[in-house]
Amino acid sequence: MSTYINNFLKYRPLLNELTVRDIKTRYRRSVMGVLWSLLNPLCTMIVLSIVFSNLFKSDIENFPLYIMAGQVVFNFYSEATSNSMNAIIGNSSLIKKAYIPKYLFVLSRIMSSLVNLMASFAAFIGIMLVLRAEMHYTIVLAFIPIAFTTVFSAGVGLILAAYAVKFRDLIHIYGVFITALLYLTPIIYPMSMLPDTIRKVVLLNPLTNMVNMFRDVAINGLLPGWQSILIATAECAVVMIIGLYAFYKKQDSFILNI
Amino acid sequence: MENTIIEVNDVSIRFNLERERVNSLKEYLIRSIKGTIEYDEFWALRNVSFRLNRGDSLGLIGLNGCGKSTMLKVIAGVLKPTGGEVKVNGSIAPLIELGAGFDFDLTAKENVFLNGAILGYSKKQMLEHYDGIVEFSELEEFMDVPVKNFSSGMLSRLAFAIATIGKPDILIVDEVLSVGDFRFQQKCESRIQSMMKEDTTILFVSHSIEQVKMLCNKAVWLEKGHVKMLGDVEDVCSAYECS
Image (cartoon, rainbow over all chains, first blue to last red; front, side):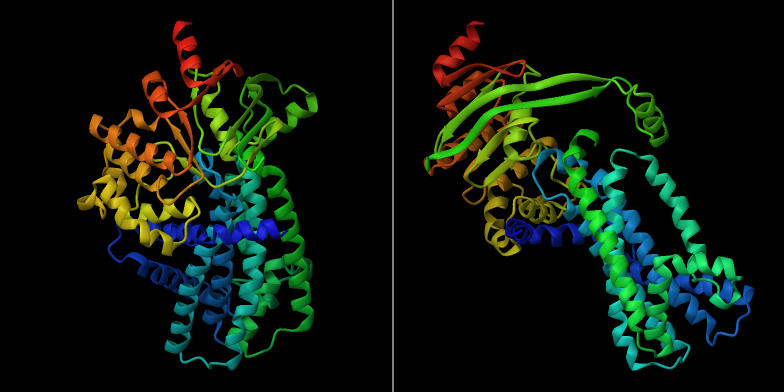
């Protein structure tokens, strides 16, 4: 175990460099540069909120904010996992030439998505101010659902990265899956709208719990319940263990398939 | 034992060459149920053993496809051997092949820090070495240019300058010296020789027997994955040239 930790410490500067690279190359040659990571979520959030708050009339106070809060979490999950999936394939030239702990590539993608999440969270707070929504002190606890989503995404990302190397179909399948998942998570509709059977399915989705937790602390001024914290911890632990195991088993064969 | 820096014990590498590349999940499932996934076995290395002491420099020679680069990859930890084991007591600076560690959209300066981190150096250490790298590669005016605009000679100069910073215990040089002009080749050779004086072990792959003779004291001649001859550089090289 200690050799793993030492190894990680040795390569920590690389994790920083890789994360910075991911962010830099994404916006290279665009006039507004990194500002896009703020503007992009801001614009999409506004568009979706206008469309869906008119489509679904609901009893939820400040429905546009409800939609945006959901998007902050969901977009992070979607971006982090999709980017992680390509982490090994995208860095194939490096993996072929130098020894680097391979999980670093996945981790760097998670980290750069986390930076983007910070930007979209800032955009979200900006919108709250513009809408003159009530600010609750519980918003400082937003790091709890964000931490859960991060660990959960990392676990899923490791699984995807490990298998996408051999089965490139996964990349295409996952794109469809993410779209389906968007509708199975209460982002653009209120939970109260759902019929009972579908409601059960939506509640089984691990992201539902994390999205709701984020909404509770960010806009409803509620503390996260113990129950949902326990469930989220268990889900994160299970996904992370599976992810690490799958990645560990597969990592030596990456070089043969990239 | 202290003196042994690399120990290669009975290393074999097998590649499964898939006759038809099965790349989709559906195909893979159907074929594995039917049991029709066929592989051609290919042994890139077979029972290779040698041992190097600190300060030795080893030249690997042989025809194309004899397993030289595969051997280096096993030592660098990129490939895991199918059988046998490699023990390395020290830090390795692989002289990564042209541009492999570079991100072509980043500037030369950014790539210096990225590549330094790949070799396991911290940002602080890299700041100390930065001026030396710029000076050695002679690219002062180009450090803020994205490396996609670099020529191959410029790339190899930068790559060589980065890989040879600090005092790595082992330096792996895989035919990189064949690019770059005559003057820069000499500069690289003298840098390698000064590193050897400081007890760095060099693993050198080249098709130029002249260079191998000049830089190495030991040599391995590989043929189709087997060790054909191992020993003093003069003996091995002359036998190789006569063949």
